[in-house]
Image 1 (cartoon, rainbow, N blue to C red):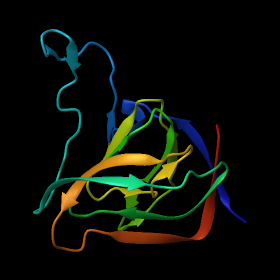
Image 2 (image 1 turned 90 degrees about the horizontal axis):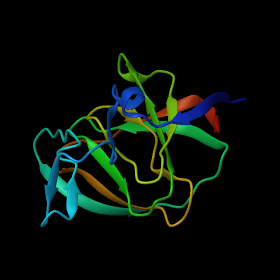
Image 3 (image 1 turned 180 degrees about the horizontal axis):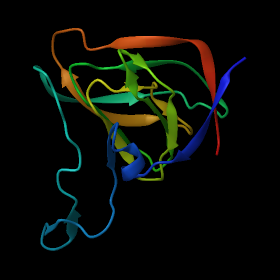
Length: 162
């Protein structure tokens, strides 16, 4: 039998303990490019222990709801930003740490145009697009060292629409 998690909308306030929401909100910080472009400046705290920032492209199969969450992972050496290359929402699962293991996960659904930057060493689910094409630009740490830790739950969680 699985435990249930209800999906909530992604907001900067609710997600703050786990990282940053990347979204255009409010007035731009600067107007650039001959007055034709708004710039929302420095919206993510990229945090790396050694290595360097790199941009990779990920393409993941779309998942359906309810979604069975069997494992989470974390990256102790760097943050990881997921920026969708379409306007489709995706599922973001994160969990607080309790002495080196994840506590009760939380699930968020992004709004069109939102991305996330998951803070270094934060437990999170795998990339979970809810619609094809599932194409993302990912900014994360490139370098040597063990930067992946996985935790498999004894009993999975069932993630449902809220």
